[in-house]
Length: 262
Image 1 (tube, rainbow, N blue to C red):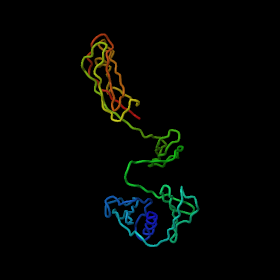
Image 2: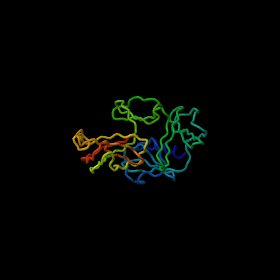
Image 3: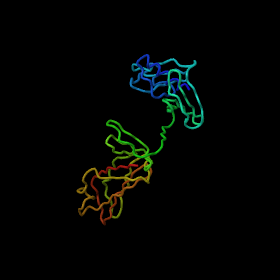
């Protein structure tokens, strides 16, 4: 209930002085506390446990009176999202609703229009939950629109040209191959590079970081014939260089670039 009153009082205060009323109210103290620095264009307010309200004024978090007294707020409760008609807010009315199952709070922002009030705990893992859907309209220049795609079942973002981008996890690095002699029909010691979090079910792309067609062991000469075998294991990428010829080969220096995208 305090959060609803806070939003209303901020709007009233904005009429009397140059304060941007917040579009969202968060529980707790503002970063840095009262007097801490803030960005003037920020549209977020804070409400502490004592009922004090804070908003950004002249680049400082400024406190406004809170706590107690009588007012014009009316509260209804129920389960699920509000569905009843409501009266637009005015100087004598502010209709609110509390979902007793989820503890979500709503306020009537216009005639028969309910808006949910943002509420965060300020701790714990970051979680986003939302309904999936189809591709939204292309955002304006300078903006990015993200949504949960109902076909891919993942988050996709669109730039202002309508190009889609999907969030991925990426590992990359280099692997330096050995230069010791490899006997006939044998493999050199495996070159292993750490890739923390990688799984054997991931896929990897790799390529030399230079043209190795002229490097001993990897070209087309009589002293060549080495093969490179890559694979992924838990938390690592691996490369084995094997000699399938009947003679020993001492390879020249070679470095590989590798990338895993999940």
